[in-house]
Length: 225
Image (cartoon, helix red, strand yellow):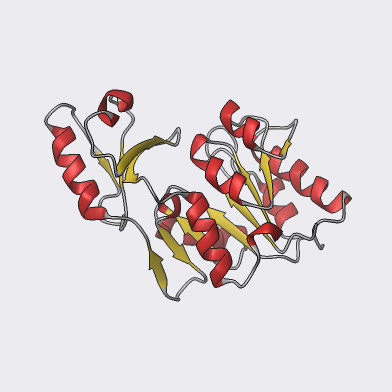
């Protein structure tokens, strides 16, 4: 297998536990000669800033697959029904004290603070909407949009066969991305469900796990350095 691109989650994967970036992982990424796709539940402007600081090319999956970008200043691609998410939010407000996160910047979903029972809320929203807990926020989003659909879309736009893409993550919202990729990796601190879905689980956690994953790909001649 030849890896032509690597998709990497940010929080909990490229970072330490306190969400500060792991510079060792950044240094290792910079040795690679394949595109690095940052995949996050966060907003596009955050991901673009992170991409600049890390030194990647600006290929981004943001808002859990709802927003795709191929470079820093180019066209943005959107998937998801934000109006349906807003209707669900209004319905949930009747039962829970909800607080939005970054509402001015989100285009395809609504992110909420993790201060309510998301399982109970899930039973209230329409079937086309789901609530996903990333560990940092609860995302109110279209059920048919996720990091896996985002990886399919950006792979097509980059003219890369998704079977030649590796993906690295830590959270339950990374499962679809890791299973959609040709080679899926879970870092050591990953959710058990993600570990079960991955082709490789690293011994090390967080950013150190990313370094270990890259070393595995290089050692097995799967990626160019």
